[in-house]
Length: 409
Image (cartoon, rainbow, N blue to C red):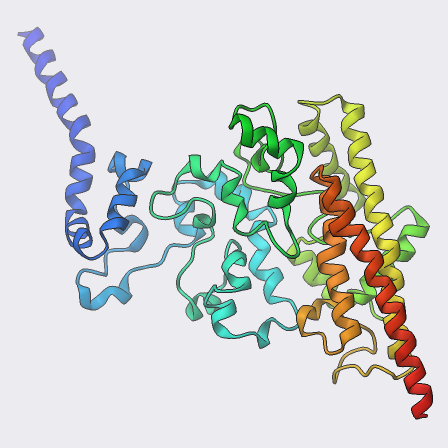
């Protein structure tokens, strides 16, 4: 009798265990039944992922239960990072403490973002398409309900961990004009080994260095702009002060402006020696898994030195254009300081300022990013060499503008 009871209990337990996914799918069968007809590949995509295969995550878990017919599709909730937090608390916490979280904040704070076409920002066809990896407030989401931060890397509706763990997942945003990390890494020795041997672990990929052990924090010592405060090197601090003035983080007298708070909120620079050193120490530990500690330190310090070389040229360029403002040859926009503003990017209003912005956002970036991504060709020919060309053009253009001004006066 006892044996029979145990057998019956085992059968019931097995039936329940096996039946759970089926029960979950039964609850969402109406969604699946309909969407197999209207969006079949979404269903196929979802069913190919871990959530779909397990049957433990229903459509309503992420999209709510209000949408029930073709006529009320607008009632379907569009997921956000908070949706994913319900099951992925640890990863969400890491993400919220890292720079990707602040991507939308950083973009929105740029002085000309508000003047861009709606489709470009809220429509996610331009800057917004990559910066959507950041947290958006309710107003921003009201203007564009699509796009969750998490599916920037774990694309919907499969939401694959394996996909997000491949360097190709980073390529969409970390490429091109101002941040060609993909091109730098993929043509470096690290990238070549990955492409010739596959993901064997012999060479690092993006996630090896920037998301060690799956950490979603993603931070670097220098930040996006390669600017840090304070700076012990007085000569270098002089260069950096000029650059910070050219970003309107400091005013022409060298005093902090409201943009310093934007830099803090956007996490685009390290603003204490301790925060910079903590990220550097972490990276040395990562590099030391494949290289000696001294080799890792030497390479990172040489990359630091490349930033200083780039900053020397950049500071001269900023000061030249600032002189044109001081002389009244260039006029500031209403309400702005008489100083170049490199954060206006491609909306810079004079040819010499267009050259200045390209020097900063394209060529300076490549000079130092190439150094950290072990790509000497990018550092040289796409970075430092182009900066030297830029400074020649800026000197020449400034001379012409000064001569023209003197003739007219």
